[in-house]
Every structure is written in structure tokens, then in C-alpha cells.
Image 1 (cartoon, rainbow, N blue to C red):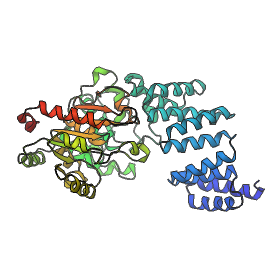
Image 2 (tube, rainbow, N blue to C red; image 1 turned 180 degrees about the horizontal axis):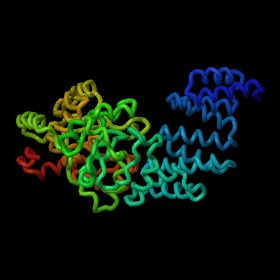
Image 3 (cartoon, rainbow, N blue to C red; image 1 turned 120 degrees about the vertical axis):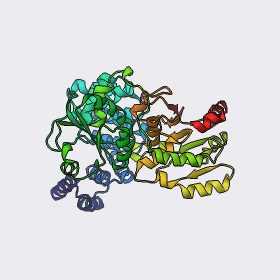
Image 4 (cartoon, rainbow, N blue to C red; image 1 turned 90 degrees about the horizontal axis):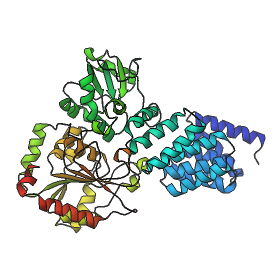
Length: 476
């Protein structure tokens, strides 16, 4: 049992942790663990410290040790469930939350369990279940912001657009989506005739997808200013010439961005995250036209077309991994070896669309399979100007990829794109079907029972290109 002094030390460690002084907090906890290696409260504090420092595997083992030391403490199971969820140990996380709920005698623990279960179901495209957990939380704690945002994701995943966008708004200002204010302006409420700043606040793929709604905003606003990722500034300027585009999204501080803009763009009425304009422009199925909306650089496109004219075969882009650990990267990756049936299904020039260098992996692969024509063009894919990548993708006959941002790029350009989506997919893909309303040119291939049927996909891909006349392939 901890002494009074040790309890004060533990309290000091928590204060340091609250202040992000994780190294100093750990020094205290480490000392306490030397004398009390099985104390569940100390172990949990150690887990929180390692979780905040980004060392999730160590945090997992500390939280697990805490539940071993005191299996009757609900908060221990809640913490273990959360960290297991971060490690995509989904079944274990659900079991932990169930134990926490059974043992819970505190409202805050119960509330967190409901919210975490809703989020877990969303991450695994189980949107109807997610909605039930969110509604259960809201029944007991009306107005809970996290529950409302989870409800929004669940409703959008089920394509309940009108209600989904309204609830999705509640995630603005949380860890999931940044809410920005440039100079004290209000959030835009959709009123036409205003000068509005639309800012990106998620990943590159999200910015690409949400940009499909920019023409709607341009049709209703007096002026639209886009604050986007610098990599997208060029293609957005060309695609939306009536908007003023600045690649200043990541500039710090936010309030200093406006000073870098042209004088006539420093006065505006309101601002809004670009995704949230779906509340006004994508609130019913018929509001999605699925048509291409990005325009590649014509000169860069012409260069790729000139190169492809020397290759009398289909040109197919390929990307075999996507995401980061937090977004389920372990389920969003293949090896090139797994893709051999795909790569052999069509006598094509396979163009690597990976966003990380693949040369070493490619050299080993080509030494084993010299008959497969696959190549990386790093000046087009490993670039800080997404216009380079867009021109390359626009020149291709098809894109075949794992769920990653290039699927959005292919759809935005109108390039036939087959995107493979695992069960831990994103709400935009829904939970069933081969189509997504955002892009007519995108086909969704879903993983079945934890396996990818590469043989079937290869057969379909081969049949697809056999049906196309050679002239059509070259012109695609």
C-alpha cells in the first residue's frame, strides 16, 4: 500500500502528466514501481504516461498489468480497452469495455464506455451498432458532444445525409477535426451571398474529396477563399478559378495566415471547415453527381501521354498500402508478392503510386519477377506538389489501390479506379456496395471474411481489359 508521501508523489506525477511533462512524471512513477510493482493505480498512471508519449505497446502492457492486479476496478478495464482499440485489437477492446460496464459504479466510466464503443464500431464500419451506442449515451447524457459527433459519423456511414451532417458538425474543435478562426469571424451557417473562407482540417484524401463541394459554394457565395494544404494549391487554383486559393493550411499561428494573403482577401464574413459544407450541399442522395471536378496541369499531362505513346499496353497505377497506425494501417497494406496474380492478370505497364519510396522493394521484386513491367516515377509521386501526381494519375487507364488518398484523386479526376476497402474502412465508403456517391468512376472492392480474393480480382481485371479495344485503352 502506498504511504501518504507516495500518494502525494503520485499526485505530483499526474500534475506533470497533465502539463505534458511526461519524462518527469515517469521518473516519479518508475521510482514508485520499484517498491510497488503490482500497485494498480501506479501501473495505470504509468500507462497514461506512455500512452501520451506515443508508446502505445508499453502503455498496453502497463494497463493490462493493472487489470491483473485489480480485476474489479472498472477504470482499469476502460483504459485497457481504449489502448487495445488503438492497437486495433478490436475483440479484446470490446471485451474490456463490457467488463468495465459491468463493474462500473461511476457515471464518467459508463459514459466513456458508451462513447468508446460507438467510436470502435465506427472504425470498423459497423455504423448501425455505432448509432445505437451513441443514442444510448445521449439518452442518459443529452447534448454530449462526443456522442453527437459519433452519431454523425454513424449516420453518414449509413448515408443518412441530412441528419448525419448536422451531428457531424459536433466533431469540429475536437481531436478529430480542427476548428479554426482567422480573425474573430463567425462560423458560416450556409447563408448565400457571403465572403467565406473554407479551410482543410483533415487528411489529404479528405481535402480532395470535400473539394467536390467547392463549385456549390462558389455558386452561392459572393467570394470563396480556400485555405488548403500547400501540395493542393496548384490543382485547386486551376480547378476552381473563381476561388482564391492559398496553400497556407499548416501555417502557424492561424491568426497570422491572413497577413500572407492578398489585401482584397483579408476581409471576409465567415469561415468553415471544408467538410462541413456537406450540411448545405450534400444532404440528399440526388445532391451527389459523382462527376470529375479536378483539372490536371495540361502540360504535365501531355508529357505523360507522350511517354505512354511509346508503350503499346495499358497503363495502370497501383498503390498497395495506406494509412497510419492510428487509422488501421496494418489492415491497409499488401506485399507485392501477394499482388502477383493481379500484376500478371494484364500485360500492363504498372505505375507505382505509393506515397513513400518503393525503389528498394521494387528492385527485389523485379529480380524475382522480371516479366512484370512495374516502375516508380518518384518525381511524380514523392513530391510536395500534388499537381505532379495528379497529372500522372490523369494519364493512366486505371488505378488499382488499397484504401488511400490516391483513390480520391482518381475519383476526382474521373479515372477508372478500383479501391480495395478493408472492414476498418472510413465512413465515406459506407458498409456495403461497390459504389460511392462521391465518384462515378470509383469501384469499391470489399474484403470478405478477413481475406482478399486476389484470384477473383485478377480474373475480373483481366476480363475488364480484354473487353476494351486497344484504341480505347490508349485514349482512356
